[in-house]
Each structure stands twice: as C-alpha cells, then as structure tokens.
Amino acid sequence: MSVREEKQWRRLLVLWLPAVVWMGLIFWLSSFGHDPVSQAAGIDFLVRKTGHVTEYAILGVLLLRALLGSQRLARLAAWAPYVLAIGLGSLYAASDEFHQRFVPTRDGNLHDVVLDMVAVTLAVVLLWLWQRRGPRQQQ
Image 1 (spheres, rainbow, N blue to C red):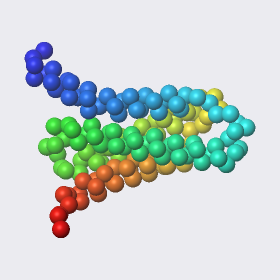
Image 2 (cartoon, rainbow, N blue to C red; image 1 turned 120 degrees about the vertical axis):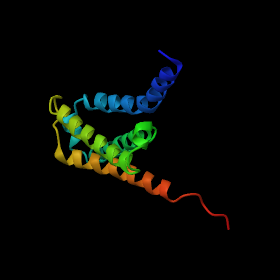
Image 3 (cartoon, rainbow, N blue to C red; image 1 turned 90 degrees about the vertical axis):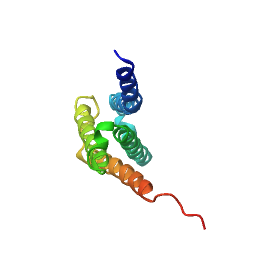
Image 4 (spheres, one colour; image 1 turned 45 degrees about the vertical axis):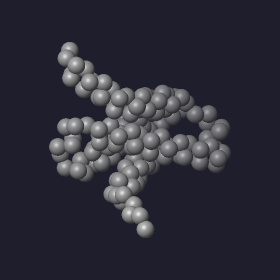
C-alpha cells in the first residue's frame, strides 16, 4: 500500500469511525428490553424519548461530519452531504426500530422512527444554518 493510499484509509477511518461506533452503541442500547412496570411511569417515557432525540441528533452530526469530509462528495452539489446525512440517519432509525421488534419486551414503533428522523433532520439543519451564517463582521 502506498503512502497516499494509507493516508486515504486513515482519513476514511477518522471520518467514519465515530459515526459507525455511535451506530453500534445505539444498536447495543436497543438490544436491552424494558421493564413493563417502569414503562408506565411518565418520567421513564420522557427519559426514553429524550434519549431518542439525543442519540439521533448526535448521529446526524457525526454522519454530516463524515460526509462533509468526503472528497468525492465535495464534487457534488453543496447540499448533497446534508441530504445524505438526513437520509442515512433516517434509514438507520428505521432499521433500529425493526431490530427492536426482535428484542423481548420491545417493539418497533413508527412514532419513534419519526421522532428519530426529526432529531437527525433538526441537527443537520441547525448545522447547515450555523455554517451559512458566515464569519461575523466586526463593528
């Protein structure tokens, strides 16, 4: 392997490893069943939904980071990494809920998929808006 190829692989690893590890963590956390008694408590519901939003907002940020760092995507339209980050995050949300259908005491929930998709989209859109604002002008 040439030095150039080694640098490309290292860059790819640095860009994508955080997103892949985060997806693995989401998968692992989804593998645990819920205690049906604690599910009835309102605070447990709030904590779980807040966890969904946080998990998938972070995933959106990590996917966008990886996609923005991709040199091949740089040749596409400027909006492509943002749309791809939302698409990949949304697909992962759907696959995670499908996975939960096979976990005892869990079920795949369309509402959770929508919540996760909103979280990914919100994180990516907020980053896009942040990057668009440009450098501040000194007064």
